[in-house]
Every structure is written in C-alpha cells, then in structure tokens.
Amino acid sequence: MSAARGLRVMAWAAGVGGALAATYLGLVTGAVPVDVGVGRRTRPLGPRTVDIAAPRQTVFDVVAQPYLGTPRAMHEKLHVLERGSDLVLAEHYTPILRGRLRAVTVETVRFTPPERIDFRLVRGPVPHVSESFVLEETTTGTRLVYEGELGTDLWRAGQWWGTAVTARWEATVAASLAQVKAEAERRAAPNR
Image 1 (cartoon, rainbow, N blue to C red):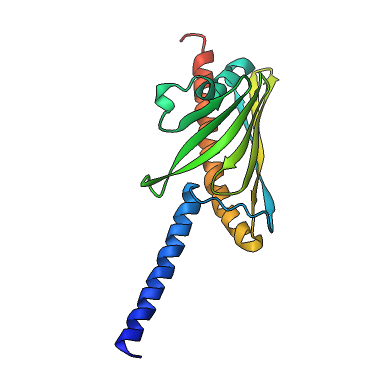
Image 2 (cartoon, one colour; image 1 turned 180 degrees about the vertical axis):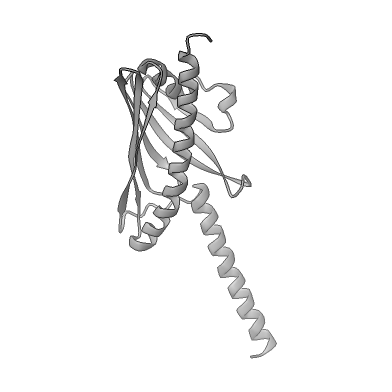
C-alpha cells in the first residue's frame, strides 16, 4: 500500500470514528434525538414503590414544587420553559460521563393533585418515554408508585440503545425518589 493510500485510509477511519463519536454524544446528551417511527420497541420502566411517612399532599407538594416554583437550588437540574395551570414544559439536566457533559431532556409534566403526576418526554436520548408518580394514602403516610414506558426505534439497534438508556434513567429516578422521600419526611416530622 502506498503512503498516500495509507493516509487516505487513516483519514477515512478518523472521519468515520469522529462521526460515530459525535452521533453517540448527540444521542446521549439529547441534542440529536432519533425519532424515525420505524421499528419501535418499548420496555417498562419500574415499577418502583416507595413508602413515605408523610401525608399525600406533602409528598405531592415536594414533587410539584420544583416545577411550580423552581427554587434557586434546582437551577442546575431543572428549567421550566412554559407553565400552565396543570401542565409545565421543563428541561431536565442530568450529568453524564463523570460530570463532563450533561444530558438535556424536555418533558411535559401534568399535575392531578394530590394523587398523580405524569411525565411525557418531548426531546431526549430516546423517542418515547411516559412515566407516572401515583400517590396512594396509607395508614402510615403515602405510597408513591413509579412506573412508565421507554420506547426506541430501529429494531435491535434501538433495543440495545434502550437497554443502555434504561439503566441510567432508572438510576436517576431512584435518586429522585430518595430525595422526595427524605424531603417529605423532613417536612412531616413533628419537631421541625
């Protein structure tokens, strides 16, 4: 192989590698969503159940407050783009790749006080996610049940991508539920 041909092959390989890396980063961060509507496969998210020693209204308020009031402490995680009486459109920020990048998802959040909050993905690393937090009163407080559905396109390739996204998505939800539980129980504690 001539030196010139070797350089062309290396340049081509570098270009393909760069394009693949850019595509991956675009998918991961949500900047390049793939929603072609072909080969859609769905998978469940959850269910995950959390028992919280706090009244249902308190738990609802803890979940809804960042969307309805957006405290300054949440500005690195959330930005409300539009707010209506029972629905918001919000950007969520999740650190990825050891905090060097952040994934941006845009979701609608619908409130049905005090028993339900529904989330629907508008833009993100996959073309379809719908989720719900259902709040049930119990004798000791509130049971929060999380469940949803994640969908990807492009058959097996999308299924592989969905598996990768689901693991991170559910870990993020689990961390959020732990924060909701801690804050709701703190607010409900008798000796605050």
